[in-house]
Length: 73
Image 1: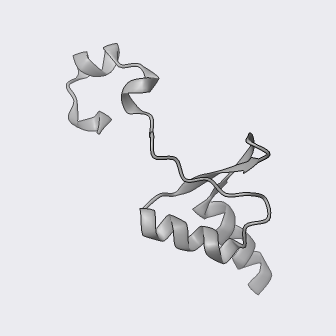
Image 2: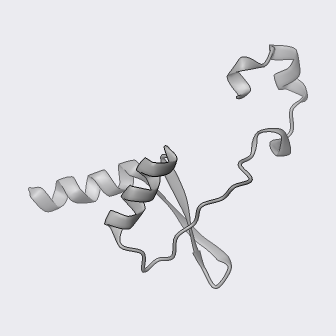
Image 3: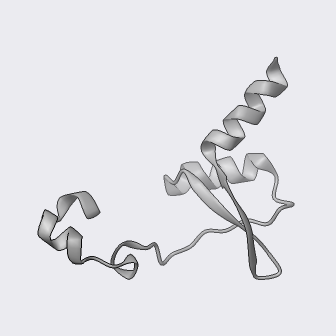
C-alpha cells in the first residue's frame, strides 16, 4: 500500500511498485450486473474493458451507479 510507505520511499517508487498484477477485465458485452458482482467480490472500484486484447475503456462503480440512477428517474 502506497500510503503505508515513508515519503522518501514514495518519491523513489515507480509504477511497477504499485500496479496491480492480478488484473480483472471485462468485455463491452459483459452485463452490468456481472461487473458489479466482480467489483464487490474483488473489492475494486474500476474494471478495464477489453476487446480483442485491446483496452477500449474503463468502467467504474460510479459510472454504473449514475446509469442506474438515471434509469430510475
